[in-house]
Length: 305
Image (tube, rainbow, N blue to C red; front, side, top):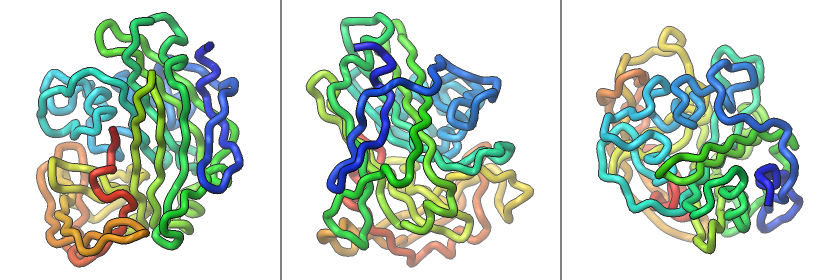
């Protein structure tokens, strides 16, 4: 299977939106020039676009944000927290789904869905990583339609971005990014959780990202450490555009309330600004106490694998 067969196009389906293998509109290894779009602008060349690093709280100018010897990309696909030192997991087939907004300087208003794979295979030639990905599906779930997997094809275009990197010891890295609708359109169907599931060399991996509307824009629930989270807005905003506490981020604690067909409902029981270089914490952080969020599959599924 050639590497250009991995690039997905949304197929029609009510229960699940499957990706058919098709040719990419662009294939790049890495870009730091910004000559394409926010999907490939990668200032530190760590295989995570700057927009992705903003959402996941890592530093877009450092390959290893927490200086623990594990690259941000590996920590991201492992479902870890790039800002907190932790031992590496055993090398395995891994995948992570991330939704981002446009960069502030971009003229492209669309949101993007990015899917990152780490493929561990004996083959290390171009195309061998994608060839190991046997199937792939995406869908979204909404508390308004409990238990139903809704297709994403209505929100996506046929344009795709493909990147592949063969590493000496950390497997083959694959990125496929697809533009979605502008943030204002996406917000009309929130809250929801967007899911991806891959079968890589016989191993099934799943990743989800919860999205909700906030006063600052569409935000995602992102793990901050082992038991706390951050509602991080999808679109980066310069500090001078926000009323913020610089070099801090709003960290929340969640308490499970109920569980049902729509998912698990949590209440924000505590929220406060904590140190996090290069990030910004709204002075309204504590106003999130009392919020509730319903997550299909619960917080254990946020991140993936």
